Image 1 (tube, rainbow, N blue to C red):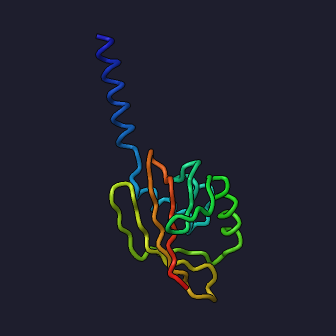
Image 2 (image 1 turned 180 degrees about the vertical axis):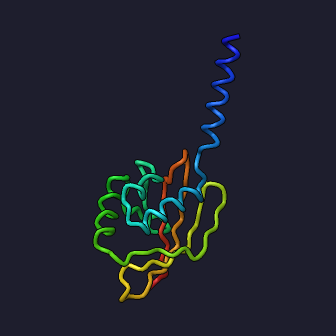
Image 3 (image 1 turned 90 degrees about the vertical axis):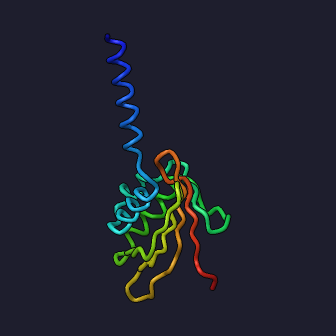
Length: 134
């Protein structure tokens, strides 16, 4: 009898772990809300420790959560007007593409950008920023 109880407990824990796994859209939304609150700790939670950030299509800009912390923490402190408006979001499996309109300074026009988030293992693993050609 104890073996069946242990087996039942293990199945329960395994299934609850699978249910608790955030979706790609959950992760994209979580980081967007933290970005708009300029909360660096909350912003970093959805990202993998080894996240890679690219300028589309394949130019690696930086990698790692600690490098991300340096870049965004400073921007969050400097940019009191910082706000990202989600214009459109599409997703397919583990990929989310957000069309964003970002205000850094209210005296300047918004920056339009696509952000593509690739997720795995419950974290954002790769980000690709797509900006219009100038």
